[in-house]
Length: 465
Image 1: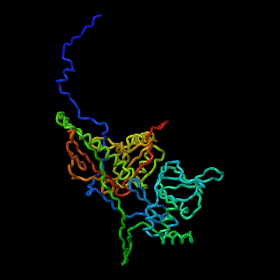
Image 2 (image 1 turned 120 degrees about the vertical axis):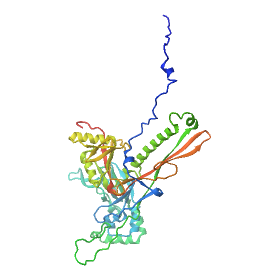
Image 3 (image 1 turned 135 degrees about the vertical axis):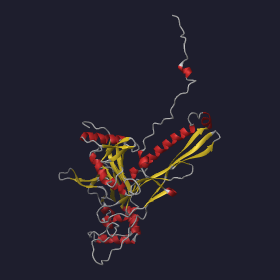
Image 4 (image 1 turned 30 degrees about the vertical axis):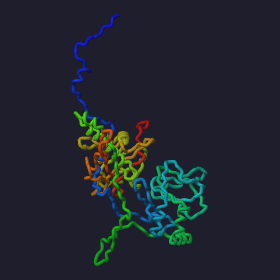
């Protein structure tokens, strides 16, 4: 057999491409998302790099429940709310109460975790900041029995502060994710030994432990209405939180490096520095939105007030669950924010019930809605290893006392509002360096501006779902 070399009769395409101009796109990046949160939040100028949220002082002593405040993921008990504990009822030394409040330790538990066990030594008082717990004892026939349920604002173990050899008469088990503040007897006794007024109050309590509950209340605005004649009107003032929350602008930064040879020789038809900068800014904006959602200090997931957090009824998000969120943010709700998989799970539940959600047009995009409130996707809301997520609902804007984004414009070398690109020079290796910085934060002006649905099951269930 003879090898015959095939002779080409025309120019090959490989050779022709050397003389042709190839049509090309700008560099593509899969990580770019819609970033609805950055588009929808009203952005407020935070001059001086900080934003202080002044709120009216709000708490009620005497209602049998303890009230807390949150700063990001940190939970603190309001000092005067310790008056709900029988041993501290009627005690009003603010300085000592603040010392006691500062000694509580924050602990978090998962469903099924045991906080205290029946028969074990009782040496701590527990304040339930968030979640649900079951008190479990022995039933009539020796089996386990649920004696009661403890939820947000409840407390147990207050007698342990004064009893050296107390024992738990029941077991306490978490039914949902729980946040608890705990004070040990040792910490209480340390403060007790330093305060004469507290010592006298505790001594009086030991002598008369069955005292009547003192009257107390919220820092209210006294008014008079429906009166006739020359009635003396009450005097009043509006009290404020003594230590208002301050939000400092956070920063996301990176250094972009480009070799001068690339910038000089390979700059047509696309500006290499400009494209590198574009992709860097896209990544920075993605990180910015992720921080606005997840940061433990100012992120929305951690700044939803404990009283504004609810759990799903059955696991997947249902119309009933979203209605409950709307009941929490009933004053001008702006939008829901959910992971795309959570939105899909909600759609499945609607289909199963024969309910069809609305949709609205937003800049040419059809966005699903519930009760006229749009549901925007956000892939920055995490999905846990158990395939659960969260759904947020918020009111926005300063005038509406809602949620606002914080930034500062007019910064040096500003490239876009709140974002600067600063040339850092050329290294000895002929590499250009640019410092790219974005400054931002978010603030919840009043607690009822933000609500969160927790334990949202997003996985496909079996059967007819």
